[in-house]
Image (tube, rainbow, N blue to C red; front, side, top):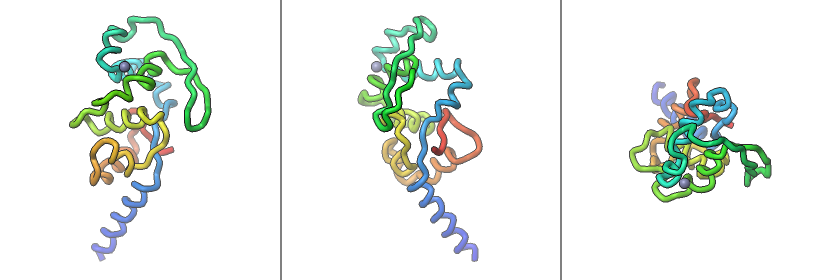
Length: 150
Ligand SMILES: [Zn+2]
């Protein structure tokens, strides 16, 4: 009997990993403005880290951003804009050994925050076979870095 339950459990994880789509929920970040600025600053590449010097040391501008997948236009912070258009598409943007949550966040951002499955995310961050671990983290009650099911 236990075996049957175990198989069912594995099957559910498999289905969820293939079907549930996750994205970065920016409304979660909107409630944490300071954390947002600090975190996005840390996502800048070396060149842009230097350019922006330190968090808060420049005028914040809002820039029009067009979601390439939906055509939706919205305003984003200039640092987020630089991260999306430059830093997130540089080689080595997701270094090996980086914390899982941060790797997933970076992978989503590099893909224009297009909702992706756990299976695809595991592949992008080099953690194929760890889908159930990722699912437990992203599917739980606590929200990490705004990562949520769509
Ligand atoms: Zn950059």
